[in-house]
Length: 186
Image (cartoon, rainbow, N blue to C red; front, side, top):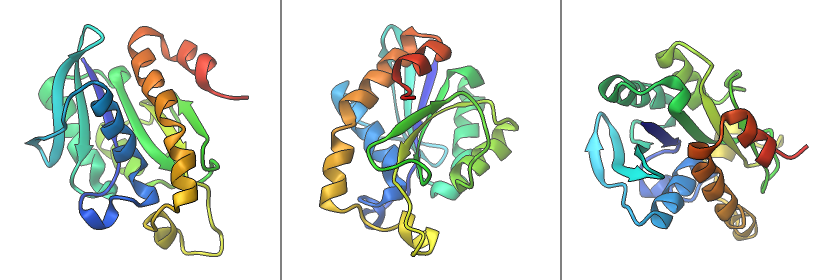
């Protein structure tokens, strides 16, 4: 069973913010697969379906991004999901807009949602797909990540959707080293 988690904040006011990259990309993937993430359980919106021959859960934690770990842990425990079958999609300040990076493990890099996931899973060894949102050192980080994405930047992000959908599809077919070799840019 695979658990694909998009991080973000619930509510209309956060819909188009930089911090909601995970929600945006998981919604796009669900649309591609003709499923809707509408079921509710453990403070999460999710859909359970067969994808690439394997039972899959697409999850959007609704507890706010900083408490995402509680929701992820509830799904992991309930469905008995192996850590190696989890992929977290999150925003990343250290990557430019339009860039992404697959990571098999590592620190949270200051991302509070990832910190909370680490705290609840008791490991940093979970896979992630980091989506670049750049950084603006002239703004408070909180204000920046909760700020709306400009139309110009949204176009750049939209150009990533097909690639991200392909990465998720290949997450089922390739081991993670091969996945990183195929998609991570040098």
